[in-house]
Image (cartoon, rainbow, N blue to C red):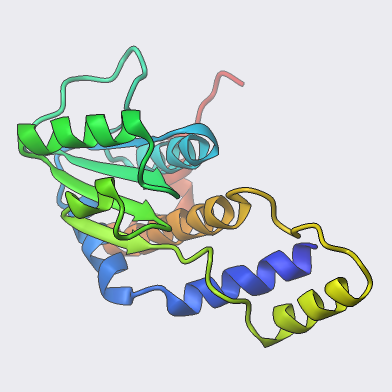
Length: 191
């Protein structure tokens, strides 16, 4: 199953638009502060991204936490949402747009409500047809009666979004000339 997921994520990465990724990186790199959010498991991806941004030395906040400050026009919000339709996410995104900050969305649904109001949309394609190897595995599973999905619910989106977020961090490390030693100085000491 891990091999099937890895194959699919590699295919998703190949299809990702580099220009969209570059625009997200540019937005984050130029922001005064970065706010992140997502619901459910996508929210966990957002929190992991916020942690790494903090390790890089950027001011990052998770929307909804008690210590999150007010959002402003010089800020960027990065949303992780597979469906792009979660009501609370859409409502908060609309408010962020009214305030004037930049809105970046990582989604599997580039025509969804939250994506249509975003300044930057990165599509993580989790619903396209499988590549040749995964396709033959699908055929084998159908022939043997194994009809269960190898990645339930939003797993492929969330996993690919996490890999994408870590790739963004790697690129920001290069741009900011930050190495792991510097990042480690910002890692928690209270564990």
